Length: 187
Image 1: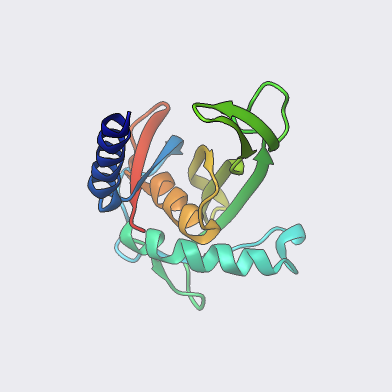
Image 2: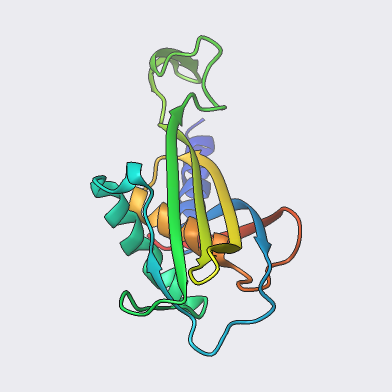
């Protein structure tokens, strides 16, 4: 029995060692729509907020997270003379993990190899992020993209930044239809 436990511990340590460097793969379901065929010569933008977003401190946090993804997509922030207005939205809802026991409770007792053990459920979240790009002169939406993810608790800022990056993949001419965009998060 001791050899079995030693072998199991060795396999577990090897698995941790091999996955410890890889990071976490954040899988995003993305849907994008665009009327753009290419970026113009000066693809500048500013952030636009809905009235409900004006006083929200979270909105400034979300915009700061989005800046690198928008920059990587070829857009340049210019609040003085923007060509585009970018509107961001995000939603995070804590739900019951699909791996939860049938009783639906996150704390309690469970049965294992050694008898009863305390059981703690890790938090599970459904997340949505959207990016809407509007041509300011015509007030016409030229790009919209939605990213969805479901998974365990992770740092909110890291996850939302990665989701916006996934939503911007392929900008300005993303592939049609729904697609999966994986982003590796280093930890």
